[in-house]
Length: 336
Ligand code: CP
Image 1 (cartoon, rainbow, N blue to C red):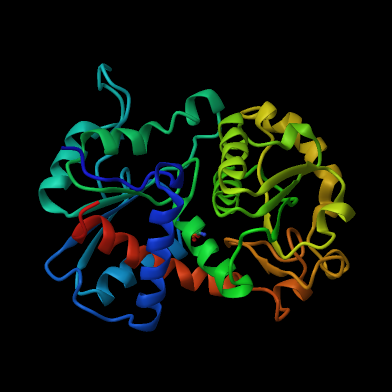
Image 2: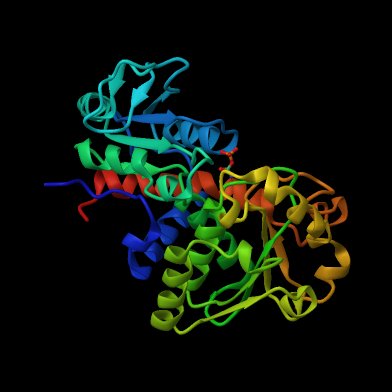
């Protein structure tokens, strides 16, 4: 039988996600325990991290388990992802063996594998995490690919802490400027989780070209229909911020220019004024502000906003620790 994985929150019901969040609250109050005693978790990083690596390693340690951190191509063999290829390039082993071998040693495998940023039609297939999920015999956890579901859980725990029930509250997801095109994962994920919990979601971005992949736009539409929220798409900054209860900022590259970033740069450079500042926050319903971090100060968001009492980005980062403990406990110890 295939183990239960955590690849995207869309595979999980709102009820199951709520149970995870309740368990996360328990772990927030009781951080140290032996729930993962004699358990080992593989953390496979194809890309850098500060929060994800530290929160997973620390969380596993605080639960009495052990985390093995691997960076393929650096301290572990480079891995081939494609099937049926002649492996006469850099890769020394295939993902099929890597997933199966790690499954013999470890009780879960967590994977971070960002898009390669050359061809969105390739990247959106999310081949690395899906291959791990296909070939592993233990639960596989997404630590950020084209979505970032662990960040979603931390965001939703933070929203509950700030707003109580999220149902019917106005959630603003705003695009912000960044000098480089960034992954759409956190933006996709923010759409998924806010809509899954019945929020009135506003997506603010400069033009239609900055809309997210149809897979996530449609999932958000489906979610708001099922969970009685709403989805509003706008390019007007003032109306987007008006009466917002929670403001979430992220930068991402425009999908029509994926892999052709030089062409996007002069377009993106016109929208530096999407920076989150105090004037925009003053339009809200005394909203909380958050960001998944890392965030470039005074590019994406001003110092004044980052340092304001209403900025809960550090709380959200802390909550990564608690929600991931709940996730590991649920996937490894509880029958789903
Ligand atoms: N938010 C987040 O995932 O941070 P890292 O990239 O530092 O892990």
